[in-house]
Image (tube, rainbow, N blue to C red; front, side):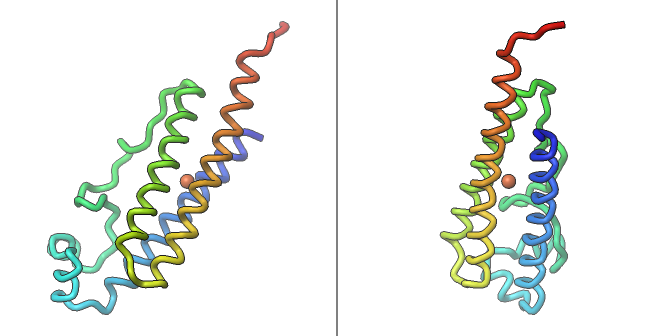
Length: 138
Ligand SMILES: [Fe+2]
């Protein structure tokens, strides 16, 4: 059951990645270089034109180094919980910056899903703690 939750969240996160990529593609598709520059994305355009390139807001490329795994379920679940809160906060910042309802609505949806993920990881953490604290008979 616990691995199902983690698998479901991981699968959904990949779908979120696709949603964000589609949004960036649609926003950049018809934009002129001048409009892209006005949107403070001139350096992005210089490096990637209008291609979807996973990077932070400051241009740092996505890397597997963002994915943490210690091998300790308590430590890893806390890392997951923190990641969900950081994702929620990032979506909230993006919502504050956006003025297009077609951008804001999907961001709100994604923000809500991060809250659900946080809750699911919290449930898994509780079950793992209960298991680790239970007496084992061999
Ligand atoms: Fe999430």
